[in-house]
Length: 117
Length: 110
Image (cartoon, each protein chain N blue to C red):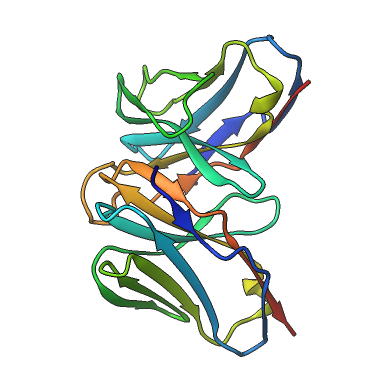
C-alpha cells in the first residue's frame, strides 16, 4: 500500500529533551515536507525537501531541523523542544515539487501528536 | 506574509443540498490550488486540485478558480452526511511552498 508513515504517533516529552519524529514514504516521491497544525492557525509548513540532500525552510522553521539522506526518509528533529512546539505534526510527500501537472499533490501521513511539558 | 483565508464556519447544509466553500489568497504569484478534506483526528486527503482559471469538475465536486480576484471555491453537489468534515484550502507558491487556510467546518444534516 502506498503510504507515508510517521512515528511516533503520540509523544509526551519534557522541555529540552531532544526528539526525532521519523517519516518514511514508499512511493519513490522526490518531494517531502513537514507541517504543524494548531487550532485556528491551520497547517503551517516547517521544512521541505525537493530531493536527497536538498532541503529548505518553510514558514515556521525555528526550533526544528531536518535531513534528507535517503529518498524515502525525512526525519524532523527537535533539538531542544519547548512547550510552544506542542502541536500535531504531519509529514507529506509528492511525486515532485515542480510544475502544474498534479505532481505536487501532497499525500499526508497519519500525524504525530507531540506534547512538550 | 502569504495568507490564505477561509470562513471557519460551521457551514450547515441539509442532505442533498449544494455546499459552497470559499477561499481567498494574498499572493498573486501562487500557481496551484488544492482542496483537502480532513475528518476529525485524521490527516488531510485530497479532494481536488486546480491550476487554470475556470471550473474543474470531478463527480459531485467542482472547483472554481479566479486568479484576477484571487479566489478559489469548492462546490459539493448532493451533499451527504459523510461529507461532514473540515475542508482545507491550500495554495502552492513555486510548486514547493504550501500555504493552508485554517479550514471551513461543514455539517451536512440528514
